Image (cartoon, rainbow, N blue to C red; front, side):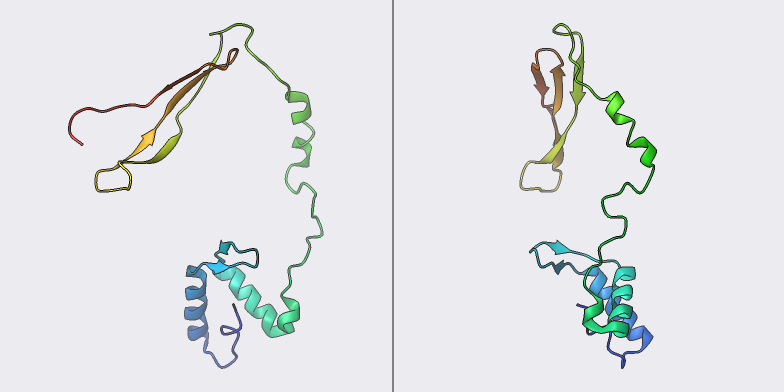
Length: 139
């Protein structure tokens, strides 16, 4: 991906244009997914490629892999705070959410709006109460 941008014959302006173009594109990863990379990442890869060649580019395992890097003291706290709970009787506690869905009408056209589903769940019985708001009148 960076071999062309690492060409020593390129001027800094040419290299910059090429790297910006590479950063705007999605690139196929060996696992088949599409990924984008920032200009800083691409610049770092180019410098590494120029200094050490292709052998310098394989990913390096982090020295702190598997360790909590920020606020390790907070990791010990959730064990004390977690636990199952449930309301003791129906209707005592309700949990609500408003997930946002796709566009209505589908496929999206001018004037389409995102669907919203209003959901309430009884914490004791797990009874669902769901409503889809309906607007009448002009679209």
